[in-house]
Image (cartoon, rainbow, N blue to C red; front, side, top):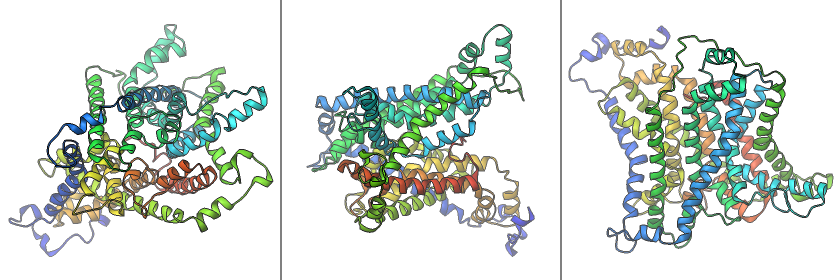
Amino acid sequence: MARHLRGLTTPAARRPASLRPGRFEPATIVWVALIAVLLLLVVAPMVTLLVTSFRSRTTGAFTFANYLQAYGRPRYLEAVANSLMLGLAASGFAVVFAVPTAWAVSRTDMPGKRFTWAMVLGAFVVPPYLGAIGWILLAGPNSGLVNRLWHWVSGEPTSLVDVYSFTGLAFVISLHAFPLIFIFVKSALDLISSEMEDAANILGAGTWIATRKITLPLVWPAIFGGIVLVFLETIALFGTPAIIGIPARINVVTTQLWQFFEFPVQVEVAAAYAMPLLLITMALIGVQKLMLRRRGFVSQTGKGGERRPIALGRWRWPMFAWCALVGALAVVMPLSVLLQASFARAWGRGLSLDNLTLDNYAYLIFRHETALASVWNTLWFSGAAASLAVGIALPIAYIVNRRLVPFGSVLGFIAMAPFVIPGIIMAIGFYAAFSPPPLRLYGTAAIVILAFTARFLPIAYAGAGASILSLNPEMEEAARILGSGRLRTIARITAPLLRKSLLGGWLIVFIVATRELSTAIFLVGPNTRTMAVLLYDLSEAGNFEVLAALGGILLAITMVLVAFGMRLAGRDFMLRRS
């Protein structure tokens, strides 16, 4: 304690700060500035989006014409229906992948748990649109690797699988969404005692019956919460529906919004079309809270209930085979075919010495006009956004948890609000708020960084809040008594004690920002394209070999950061739930 308090005593410390009347506290300026920043980053874009949806493009007068145009064609209504059905289908697939896997890792003696954890982390880290490209190379109707093997083995001309279908689209989305359900369910399972399962076994219930009738009902809130998150993530997703859905003629809300930004840009109509998506998101969060509030899901086992792994016996290896299959589908298969394509002259020719080349990487590094710039933009935008998000989140979390101002809970609510705002809607709000004169930020680095900061502020805030709650305030109070100001106390005591947690939060925001497409694609200009946007552009051009090489570079950067985070912030820092 003395080490942290050293240097804080000043001549002004003869009386405690709280006893010095009329003393101006510089922290007050910071609190006011934080309110202004939150209003700018979160409230202003959403209010502007709402106002824009009711504003005439020509006269600026109030009108409902934008809503009539946005929902006046069957194609636009069909996109909404497709998004809702896609969300349900992807959630269903994700539950099938996640719940058995989480149960096996948390509750059983299944071998290979570290491998399963690595596969879940890999599915979480790999950008969904990159996984979609991998599955195009695997399950394209004619040239996909799986179908070519099927043609060779069976001699049948028809394809075995077709990724360009509604089922294929939902399946691919779920492969990168199931970690959300996995984490929720495993965290809940880790807290359940084995006593109730033992009682059921004594009464004659087998392992599977006890799990189905006792264990799973107890973790239903976690399962339902994960389903809601996957559903919301799916209906707000742009990359995978664009890469697979557009060629398959499956129109969804996000791809329709993208079409409203084609020339001529119809931002008013896009704003009107985005409003129901925001309302659906808010309604689902409300329904989830209402459902879980009206029912009790509590295991009355007292403190320290024993948690013993369930012996699966001869089912140990079949259970591991299921987990390995999920990992292969989500990570191993798509990344393997992407790696092969990145070193291939023509990916369809398969593995052979005369087909191997380094030219795809050489082209990106030495000859492509914007590849290196996109790498730099990605690192610069993501680093700046992560720093801003953590820098804003820490003092807000401090205010809220230390109850320094009467309206602190409102600040916390605003900081978490982007969690329920889909990224694509956030991007349209930033476009509407900051593109017109006098700011004219569209296409600049500033608008992308600010949008990324707002988009991922809830991640930084949740981590900072959980860390501050675990920190005893006595050292801060001692520093205040010795005369240290509030800001100096935070800088000299609070922040150093939370260094590890803040670093973990910074890395998470940085990693998810490097792969963000839904927000970036609406806001970047010719000189501010990120790697995610360039990957999407390459997919539209059909240049899968160069695309795979750029994806390899992005994954290499991500893996280095994940390894760095594991070393400094813990092995599961990417999947830890506060």
